Length: 161
Image (cartoon, rainbow, N blue to C red; front, side, top):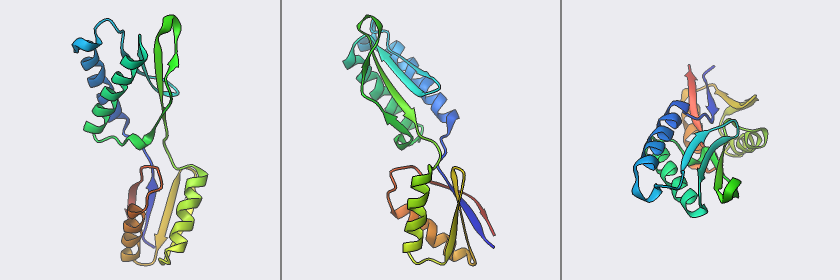
C-alpha cells in the first residue's frame, strides 16, 4: 500500500550557515560597531544579543534575512520579546519548533478526514504517516495539505509505492 510521511524538520546545516553569515555581517557592519552584537545557538534555540534593544532587533532582522536567503522557513522559530540582560544589554530568544506536536497532528488528521479523500492517517511520534490504495489519492492529499495553512512548515518524505 503506497504511503508517505508528513514531517516538520529543520535543516540544521543551513541554520548553521545562516548563523555564520549573520555573525560575519554583524562583526563587519559599521552600525553594529561597539554594540557587542552576537548570534549563537543554545539548547533553547537561537539567541541574539546586543548592548541595546534597538541593535538587538536590528541584529534579529539580519539573522532572519540570512535564514530566508538560505531557504529556512521562519515558521520553525517562535521569536520572543526582548529581555534585559546584564549591564543593560538586550537579548532576544528564537525558540525552535521542530516536529509536529500531538494537537497539530490531530488537526491535520481531522482535516484529511473532512476532505473526503480515500486515505488513512496515523500519528507516529512527531510525524504523520498517510497511506492509501492509489498513488493519485496520496498526491491529492499532498496538494490539499499544501493548500491549507496549519501555522507550521510541512515537508513530505518517504513516498513509497
